[in-house]
Image (cartoon, rainbow, N blue to C red; front, side, top):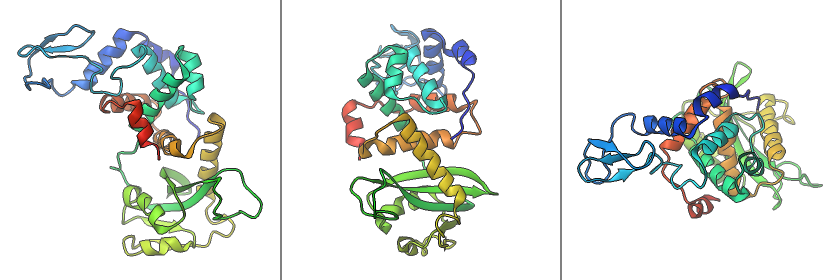
Length: 299
């Protein structure tokens, strides 16, 4: 995935200080209106912390980071914005080890924050793929002798990918970790991410046949050793290169979060100037996530 960096000088100019970061969060959090979470009143005065708001009736003081992904942040807010910048704009992504070294925090702290950000990058499922959509499955893992194709190797992680095909180029795309190549495992990506009127093209795998009642325009074409789906396999290769280049090893239970990150960036590759703003906005509207929740989310 080719993703050019948002200008670093412009980023530093906008978010180079804690005050600038807090100010931006305040504008996003209360952009529509302020309502006290205790008494629902709309009048407020300045709170104790920077840009916090205190209800003028009941006195409830709400910080600008409360009820957001930045709730109980373990490091300075400007460092958090810096991490968001690197995660969303770095061409190859940013590992937690690199983030820890870059911003002077513990690796576990950087890892947890990155996991929270990946949760905010999860698809809203509000924009299903349409037009011509190509679907295929692939595996991540070391190839073994006599295990080509849809082999049942315990050492591999299986993923299903759906990509819009637009005049020979890739449109938007989504992917999901699957347990196996059965219809039950593959169905969620159709149900959650593909418009039922889309012209879906898959290979001849039998699991797709049961989807025809819901997806009337589904067409199956023999892959002919991948020759019939060159664009789709380019995207599979690009994702594999990204995940292996940034993360030499990724446990299956966390792979979906990294998929969320990759395709959040991929689907906004033509809007690079606004990708950081979109991510910050999502973080503001993301409910607080604890480490325990992150571990429970892992599949």
